[in-house]
Structures are given as structure tokens and as C-alpha cells.
Length: 236
Image 1 (tube, rainbow, N blue to C red):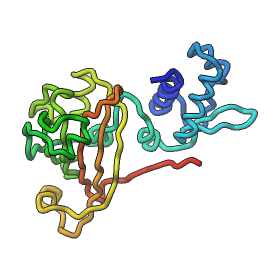
Image 2: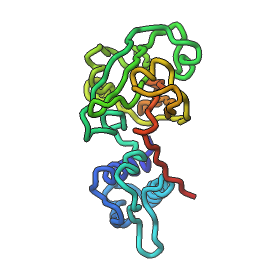
Image 3: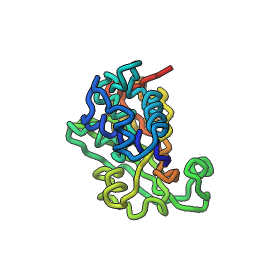
């Protein structure tokens, strides 16, 4: 990671944690040069990245200010070490996980390509239902290479896999590439999510990456459409 990216990430983290609040003015560029021990060009590149991410605005003659977005939007944009998973997204609710299927298999060619691995390697296949306050929210279908994420056991699946990856394995989850689409439920999903055949689901297809660029997860999460919102900020 380049120095300006590290600085931008640090400021994103501080915004996410509330150290810098909406409409707060950030330190002046010359002050940040001293704080981070870098050149003014490096600070400018970090600020430009934050502007592109929709987190700050620059006001001519005044400086840089935190954009007035709500906490959930800041969390969605953040690439901090605490990657946003189901447990973190609904941390105000009681989270339960029901394991439908858990096994070690050879990946299909498609899944192997997405995880940048050989097809004769092995992955965990994890099929879970996630509950928030005892209500079923999502059915997950997850594949993880066992040589990248070792040691997953059934008890890990009852909690947060992301927390296990970061707290136990000490790996840094960095980013995800996502595609979101509307689908109709399968019979399995109708049963576990307590919905009818015409009830729409929102599917998040995701490839997760560690900070070294290694894919660690390929998943499809099928959410009840009445429990899921997608928020985005677009900047010109």
C-alpha cells in the first residue's frame, strides 16, 4: 500500500469511528504533513482519494471538511480492518447462525478461477442461514480456500467467520468486489426464510480479498428484500 493510501485509510477509519464528524474541518495540509511526516503532494493525493470516495469536500480558501453522510454510509465506504460482515452490520441485534451444510470439496472451474486457485485444490463449502433477533434474514453460500483460511470448524460457523479470520488468524481483510441482483427464492430458501415463491430476494455475489490481494472468499448471499438496503454515494 502506498503512503498516500495509508493516510487516506487512516482518515477513513477516523471518520468511521466518529473521531471526525460530519461537517468537521480536517487539519490543514501543512499540519498533516508534519503529523504523517510526508510531503504536501502525498497529502494532496490522500485528500483527492477521500474526495473521490465521497467522504470529504474541499472548500476553496477554507480547507477540507467531512461530508455530511450518515454512519451507515461511512461504514459502507470504509475499507478499515473491521470489514463489514453480517454480525457487524446488525450488531444492535442478537445474531444467530444455523449451519445447513459444511464440507470440504474441490471447487468447480468457475469458483477456482474466482479464487485464483487450482481446481484440484480444496475449499470449504459453507451454507448458513443468518438470523437477527430470531428472524431469518439471509441464506449464505460461501467458498473459502482451506490453505488461505485454515482451521475453520463448525463452532466458528456459529459465530462470525470474519472475526475468526481477523482476530484468530490475524489476517487483514481489505476489500470486496460485489454484484447485486434481484432473484426469486429456491425451495430451500422459501423454507428457511419463511417466504413464498414470488417473494423477491436480493443476492450479493462477492469476492473478498485480503490486503495482499489474495482472494479468500467467493460467496452468494440471498437476502430477504424486506430486511436489506443498499446504499451508495456517487461523485462526479
